[in-house]
Image (tube, rainbow, N blue to C red):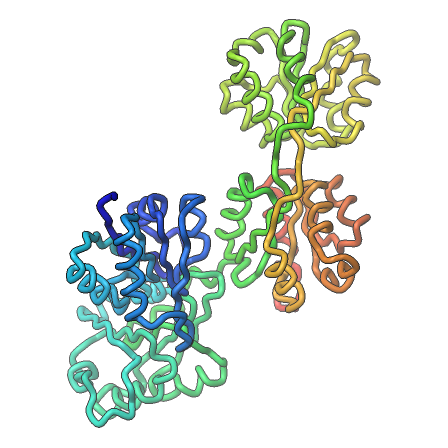
Length: 512
């Protein structure tokens, strides 16, 4: 049996980008992943496919497992000789009960390592534009639990020292006890006009901040309906928020957008939309697979000397072509005498990754654009290889043939309907908690339609606007019954994001 080890890993405050490099390594090597409610779900994707995932989160007092049972679970899984990663929101040793779990591991004789995380006490205020220290305002900071029972006869917190001796106070888990916290601070000498802010779901697209003073913050929070989880910041530094608030000014903050692109290709779109503040709901509708019959592509690769041009229509086509070329024991030198065309800048960029600069890059994937791009080339009698999707439309080869070319179209890959969490998708659509859906190809539209329960499209998609990467995809979406609200002017991921941003700017302040 292998020597067991447990990694106590801080997952950070919510933004998955704030986890440490070492934290990601521990997730990837875990054979058992035990995780909390406050750990970002997207981090679970870094786990090995065969890793056992166990949720032990605590939400609003509803504990999936009591702490004692979590401790026992960690020990039990480690004693099975497995690598265990205990993933905890924030930092495991800052009000995360990581110290208790570490003590249990010591008593059990099990090796462990602690991987610190970015604590919400620092990150949430920073994302709200509140520095915890400032040379002009304060040089002292205290982290305090706000979860203390206000009905106790005596408090374990030294309220007089906190109220009068510490410049910035940060309370964890204190929303329910906010009136008690305010009462204790003011009763022990903190001025009622002291600035206060509560930051809910800090560092995430759902972040909401309510500001006020000790005199009125409880009423403001009650009026806003703010609930846990939230960090409470008390001190003069809160006054800087009006000038330094950067995160909540992002143009798509709070917008929930469905991304239907394949999981392998979704990262650039998700990253771009997230950088604008959106919450991306990933429901990939397609998977890329080899074509039903690979022999046509193999035959074409065996006689590359016969071609004058290779025209690539997508990133997937480039990837599939070279994967098969390399598998046959050849390399990019097979294309040394051949000119290449890449439909769109993304395809050209993927081709460049293999060391080839495209000789021709039509800006858009429509027949007119291809004809215009090839206008200065005499294609009469030229042999063109067109490796692309098995189910592709005939528009492009027909256009090239009309220009006199001899076109050999071969399937390099096919797209399949991806498995998705239909229950979660339907729940999102039923609750009208989605602001927009994005489509990056006609296949994503068709497969999304196929995912929905039969006969419920009109009900579930009612009022749901769609953003499409180009006119072909937009036409497919309209024909399928979607309200196409935005179409990229430049048929790229940045172009799609620009169209999405423009749409929401146009509808700013209105329910969309």
